[in-house]
Amino acid sequence: MIKPLHDITPLWHSQPLSRVAGLPVHLKVEALQPIGSFKIRGVGRLCSLAAARGARRFVSSSGGNAGIATAYAGCRLGIPVSVFTFANVPKAAVARMREFGADVVEAGATWDAAHQAANHLAETENAVYIHPFDHPDLWQGHSTLIDELVDVGYVPDVLVCSVGGGGLLTGIIQGLARHNLHPHIIIVETHNTASLKASLEAGRLVRFDLKPSVAKTLAASQVAEQAFISARDYGVEPIAVSDQEALDACRQFALDHRLLVEPSAGAALAVAYERLGSLPNHQRALIVVCGGAGISLKQDIFDY
Ligand SMILES: *Cc1c(COP(=O)(O)O)cnc(C)c1O
Image (cartoon, rainbow, N blue to C red):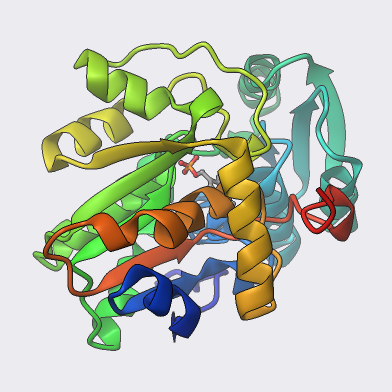
């Protein structure tokens, strides 16, 4: 039995969002995880299982929440962590990883460079690569989010979550299958990071031409193959929002719920604020507030 490194998060009924959407809206508040995002669910499980199998070192390829989650998990488990980051990773994120004792090195311009460096270290130094979105143990950890809904007897008709590489979505779909639940799922990306939407529209896994977006943690040029297959077979509805909509939603959410979340969570919240009201036949909506450390008062979400 593996002891989870994540917390059970609150399920809030949102009065402001319910009023705007015209239906009961609940929030799974992953922003209240100890590291500020859901990532610790999957990363925690992946690291704990690897530790139980004798892992001596973890390596991550993320300049964001997955790197922070790996640093945190390594700190809790007493296992050293190396994180490869890439250009334009926020200093605050690197500082957080170092706070948990991780060794942080910039590997190149893009995530692909960090991914390669991490793979290389895993091969040469016998470290375990903690992939940010593509591993079965990771998905199993993310799926605990659904177990927690079932534990409190809450079942949504529509579930909204944002997608980067698709790890969260894959875990959610697996959790739903375990409990034989089949809500409508809306997956949200920003226009500039809409790689899963592009693959679903093409009918096959494609590489998306990423452009800069405020939703940095949604920027994966290609989702995990399993994420594409799960999303296609489940029949999720893809929606893309603008950066401005994601930022507006972060700001409104901070005013409504006194909680600052990063734009990747703002993307899912934007759908709740702007579009749920126009969906037919939905009784109960759940928004996964994925959270994220990539936000500060300096992001100017109150000033633009
Ligand atoms: C990683 C992350 C995402 C995207 O999750 P994927 O599993 O890559 O789809 C969204 N929001 C936050 C806050 C994240 O850390």
